[in-house]
Image (tube, rainbow, N blue to C red; front, side, top):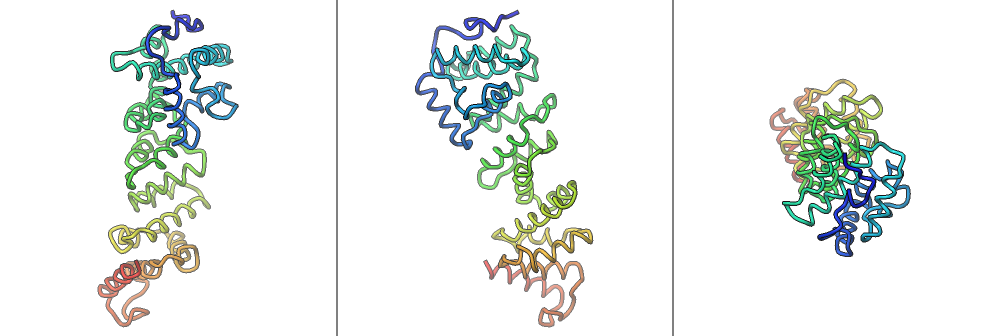
Amino acid sequence: MLDFSQFTAAFPTDGPKPYDQNGVREIETFRKTFDGVLFIDRVLKALGLGEAPAGKAYPPRGDSGLRALHRQICESNVSAHAKLSVLYYLLLDYDELRGARSSLADSLAEESDLPQNYQILMRGLWHMDRKEFKFALEHLAHPSLPSEFADDIITVLVRHAKSDDYSLPLAYYHTTQPVLQTSSALELLFGAVARTSVTEALYLSRTHPAPARQQLFERLVAAVLEHPQAAGPRGKELVGLPLTGAEEEWFQDFVAVGEGRKSKNAKAVAQMRRLVTGRQRGPVGLGGQGPAAAAAAAAAAVRAGR
């Protein structure tokens, strides 16, 4: 069994090392893109090594900094597997620098019997910290992992989605089905769902109790109203939803007297909804037009208001 408490048993003493000035600068650049906090910072904080501002413990500065961090890890009051997990993460930095043939992290895991799920988690978090999100999800969505850091993973994936492509955060959510602990993460996730599938967002809102359910429903309606093509497929999907009595009331209130009324599309979308549900027929408020013509007129009004 590897005695990882010995520095030279855990880290190579020759060859290129990742924590020189250039390596530290690169890591700090990644940290800035994540609002100052990497996932390794969260792990170290859980070990009691990250109570100081993020970046104090990682990255270590040079060989002396790495030795000091190694000593802190080994002296921390956590399990051996937790300590090895951090060492595994650090060795992934070595492997990246040394190229594809380097397998220092895997060798440590094999020689110390680090369980596979610890390796999967730390490799996934390492890829997250390098903004390699697709590779990260190949690990973090593994069924052997608990939904640890799920709120943070969802938050990062949504905020770093490109061109409104939320496939990665939604893939993570649907695969792992985490119970999110923070309202901010839930709102980000729901916003991603609402911009991807109106119907799916409706059913997601129904999984939450009031008043959160109403707030999410109103967020869904707002997401459609603010879309440049509110009269297009998303708008038609919204007005055609099979709403409950409470949801119908929320919809009408939101577009008539709530925040939704501020949207230039609110009136026309509300008219489309009334036509679909049969709550307004014939000439009432629509200049005598029949339902089909009135629906077309309402859609045209939305487009004209853009």
